[in-house]
Image (cartoon, rainbow, N blue to C red; front, side, top):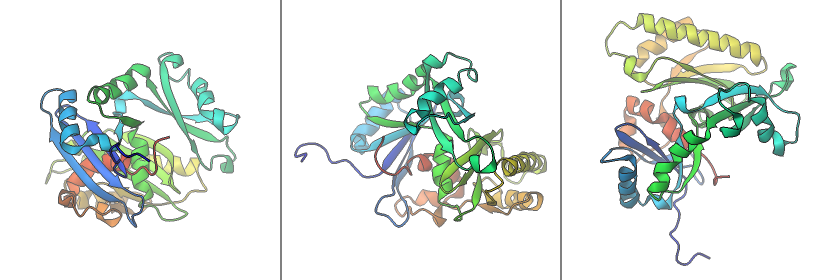
Length: 309
C-alpha cells in the first residue's frame, strides 16, 4: 500500500512539442463505454521547451499522469520487412538486423521496434512486420526536455500507431478501414482492420494548404490519384481484407472534398466526426471540426489502454 505517494490519474496523457506551443491531451478508456477526452489543450511556449514543461507540470500536476509523446515524421522510418522465423520473444531483435541495409546509419546506433502485420501468410506470402527505426540521438533528444522538466515519459510513439488507435474506433467488424488525416505537417493514410495496422503512407498535402472558398480541383485530383493508387496496392497485397470505406479528417470545405473523392474513388467516403466515437463533454472546442483534425493523432496516442510495457 502506498500511503504517501501521489495517486496516479487513470488513462494516458500525450504531450507534443512544437516550435511555438505544447499540445496535450488526456484520454480515459478503461471503465468507459466510449473513450472520454478529459483534456485537450495547446499552450503557447514561454521560454524554452523545458521552461514551459516545468510550468505545465506544476499547473497541471503532470507528474500524476502516464505520459507519452509522438515523434515527428522526419525523425524515424517505418519499414516493411519479412517477419523473421524466430520465436516471438526474439522477433524484434531479429528485425533489427533485417533492416540494417535499409537505413543510412549503423543499425547499432538505432532504436528499433516492430509490430506484426496480420494476414500476409494467408495470402500465400511471407508474414510481415512493420519496423520503426530511429537514431539513438533522436530518441534521446525527444526525451531530454521531459527528463529536464521532471516529467516521467513512459512511451515514445509514432503517428501511424496513434492513428491506428483512432481508426479502430471507426472500423466495421470484419472489414478494413482506410483513414486519411490531415494536420499542419501533412497527411497520413492508414489501412487497418481488427485494430491492427496493415499499411501506412504519407501524402504531401497539409491542413494549411487548403484555402476556404478557393478552386481546389487540382489538389483534389492529386489526392484522389494518390488514394486510388494506395487502395489498389492494398487490395493486391491483402485480398482477404475488404476496405469498407475511406474516412477523412476535416479540412476547409471538407464536404466538397468528400463529395469529390466519393465520385472518383472505388470506396465510399465519409468525413471523420470525433463525436461519433468519443465523448468530450468537458472539451467543447472539439466540436470545431478543424480543431478535431489538429488533435486527432494526439488523442489517438492517448487512446492507449493499460500501462506501459
